[in-house]
Length: 414
Image 1 (cartoon, one colour):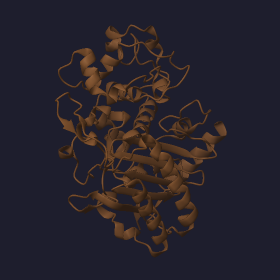
Image 2 (cartoon, helix red, strand yellow; image 1 turned 120 degrees about the horizontal axis):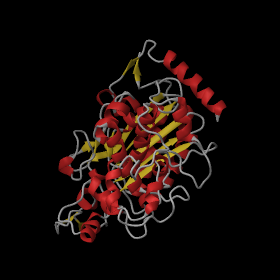
Image 3 (spheres, helix red, strand yellow; image 1 turned 180 degrees about the vertical axis):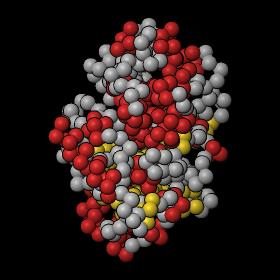
């Protein structure tokens, strides 16, 4: 571990020296276009991606490839909004789903480096970060939950019937609410239940844990979750257009895609108990209240720029320290989640996936320093399982076209 941190320190120092030499950062969402990645040697890759979209009935997707902190490829495929005949471009904004958890984890590491919190801090209880929730807590095991437990999905939360973040109507009914709960109210409702296991002794994937981390970030920073992440993470990474998603098509950001569900999916009741039937990706769930668990919207090239700012490699200055990077990517075993990443197994690289209605995303950072990111504006009947097929597509594309990528860096202008 110490040897790894030393190497990361050297890489970061080299990055600071190397960056900025005759290069100017590019405003990615206002400079990139499909035309820049319309390359003859990659026509076979384009056909492979198009066939993949046809196989899974995906309306549109955005793909980017980075090697050694240089952006080699950024291209949109298919439709960003079919009804408006708007093509997918590198600048198209897309919901990132649970890739948002990686962004939240970076925010927590930044706060730890600022000395504002520690991963060992307890979250609830008299000496915890959020003591005001103690009045609804009956299970004293809640007082054992640390910030790190939430990051690693070890907080003691387990979903038996429905995830509270994706079952707002049930939460409203169970708690006698006439309106959908916001984040703090939703957490208050969830904390009335006993934990499923003693914190730190097991793991179970938890969106609720990352919503609580969003509240932790707000409390210790004194800013809204969105404002803190934009100021201390997104902007420092050289990105501009990260936003918390809206729930409906009318709430989309400028340049954001339209989302699609499988063609045979039936309408569902609106999340707020209005009695209306809606398309699941537009009103079926309260996406905005997910916050750091799954609500971010961004373009794929800007998401790649953020990844470049937390990878310890030369080219893009990192926004976290080598020690934080080492902590986030340290691999223990198959029973322990990495911090923000799904997995950081040394022989297969770092992986972060995300999926909900209308969206499927995969970030794959390979051990050789090549990173591929794909985000769709369409969900399929495979649900979260689609990410495994994205990973298979990445393997095929790397095998066929990795050595044909242009030698350039779209992050910078010479």
